[in-house]
Length: 253
Image 1 (cartoon, helix red, strand yellow):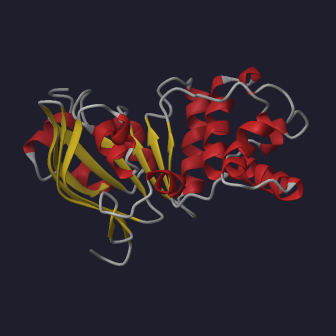
Image 2: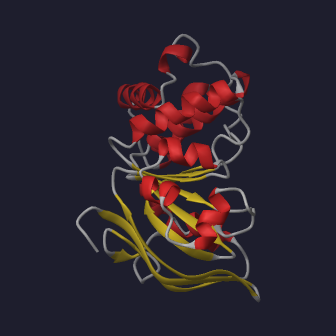
């Protein structure tokens, strides 16, 4: 493991009941970079990133073998608090899912849960998080308005702000633009470029052009396996595996 690695897997296998969803995944994900996972639907991309913050713990019948480390520590080992882990490794989902609360309370929710009740400090966290999510200028005069009154793209950026408010180190994004129009997608992609200055960003996307635009590293998955992983330019311009080349050139998938 090199100094830049923040999350690593070693011979990771996962089953949902009798069905094996991940097979022998070994990879190292660098800090303060964007890593994209591509591959056809059902190949294990979302399952894999849900291993990184133990979201799969919530799925009945899920079983894991192998190792996932965060800063070199096995997150499935004894002594790991999954709730604390999810604060450090936040997640943004495919469909924007703001709480039925005000814009302000959506962002303040996480810090409140973790014991922050000082109004001045909360105000600062809310503003800083909305600024980092490139949403502050659009909502600063209506923080008490319902979050559900925002557009889809604004709601997704609000969900990113909500994730940032608890001070994560890693942001997992599971197809964050699939429900958005091209203009909103462009704003999220620009935001991802900004976020990697401070955070490790891991994005699952079915859009290969998006992966090529926003990521520094790309992993291609197929049937639960990590077929190839490397710098995005190399994966797209000179893939080493024939399966990767066939997928990228549209011969299957």
